[in-house]
Image (cartoon, rainbow, N blue to C red; front, side, top):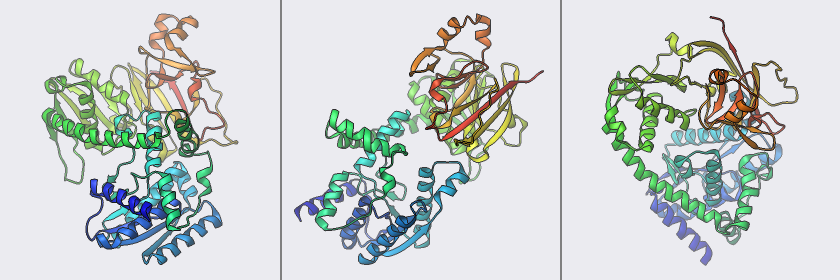
Length: 492
């Protein structure tokens, strides 16, 4: 009894810190039947009278594990009835939906879950959605985001509160949760897919974290979760500074539409931008882009650095980013403009910065494939890109100017450009080679080096077009999605 009371006290303190619960809240509780969600439901039951909660249990049957999946639904349905709570159930064919939307099964499952939670929340007049993420989930997320190079915004991991979503168990470890269930005499279901190592999170959960706890520190999970919380607090301070700097630099938001739609053009004071540290400059650029198109997918750190180069060049220089954002210098202003999709200029991806063209690869997730004309330093190329699932029947082109790559290994986004200091690619055995060394070893004349077109992900060169590709992006048996890219120079 003492352990369960301490456990509940810990959760109450955490939810109070982040103001998760208020008197009379109506809560959608996402319950899969696993230990974490059963614990969440039990905790909400413990707090039900104190906070005068209305709780509606929602279970999602993903159509992946056949009879086991149906048994999970029956288990959660019975649990909800035992606790005297309302119950709603959804069933989806997640695999089919993932294929249709060209995304991973994990991502599609997440989308459908939250869509269902939100549907019930609105329909039943509830105001919050409770999910069962805990400290171990937080630690896994921080590790994955760190490995992917997500920067400060990814290192805060899973937020305790995000809009209407609350996570009351985020301060508790998986071990604490299982001990609580044991002492309460509560059973739960085990999802066998959580034991499979096909999914990245499962590999982190089953291999990376246990190794870190054994080899580095037994409190790794706790420390990673605490670090995420510290970063979350620090980010709140940084955001205030960024917002103040943004307003100071903003000259005008022209052709502003209605509140629920986008601004079309932003202009910033050059003098004010130049007074700021690089970090603040880049955060202002990102905020401007989000205000224009309400998206940041495919906008990378490389793009932010490219925009910074416009601060030191003359009037007339410009670049075009994914989502049709044009950034350009205009005397003492730096301007961002959301291009009209009907303009011919938006159909041909124009030169970006000093001979850089950013490729909008996110479009492939909806269109499968498409072709565009691109212009770099006066030369016109025909670009073709196709995204497809890696299957045994897949056929790879042997053409010199068509190559295939592992789509999921792309970190910062793709661009076509010419060489830059620090460029490299990978040889077999994960050996890195500088592009400069390759040119020297291959005895490529200096004049050709300057004209050699490159497909790049940041400083990592995927393809020295017409020559070789990096081993780091090669398609292997573990590749899930393949991006095929062709680029041919067009005659004038």
